[in-house]
Length: 219
Image 1: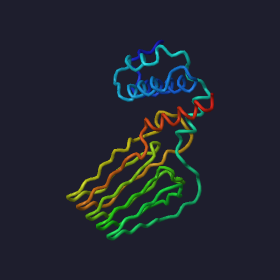
Image 2: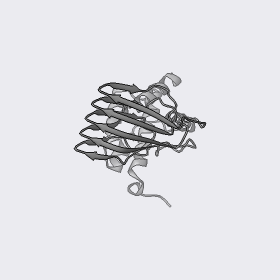
Image 3: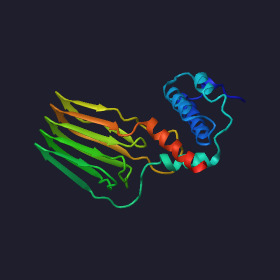
Image 4: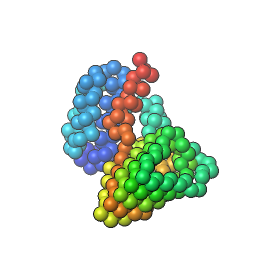
């Protein structure tokens, strides 16, 4: 029994179209300009048929090797093992950055007073599926960068403040993988402060980097 295109989840169709665009670009079937333009359209369109038409003229279908490579590239940086129980950051009239390939503790606590705190999880190594960040931010401006392949839940309280969570949830839901997907849970208080949760690298940048990597592999 055939399945109507409209009955399929739009994000599944979008993922398949983006995969086919990357596949054909990496094998030299379309130029970078065409790939870049169609990728923008694929990430914005909300119509099943319009999405499918983006690849209707492309000769190559996605193969098993591509799917496996994509799984590895989009999988979270997860290494099972022991992690520090609590990691504490205190900033008073100052600023601090935490980033690079650090192993994430089970719980991160930070106190920020008239300060700027930045935590960058882009290249961090997760060893547990749930990480809690407990914040107390007063008259401060804080930024938390997360990879596109983890989940983020914000449960912090705001008092004359803002918490802007721009990170997409279930970033790797399009990719079936046995690698655990970590979740960062943000709790605590933001008072007269701003806390921004965002991707350091957009999904488009991630797809372009992946496509360029495949192109080098196949050229």
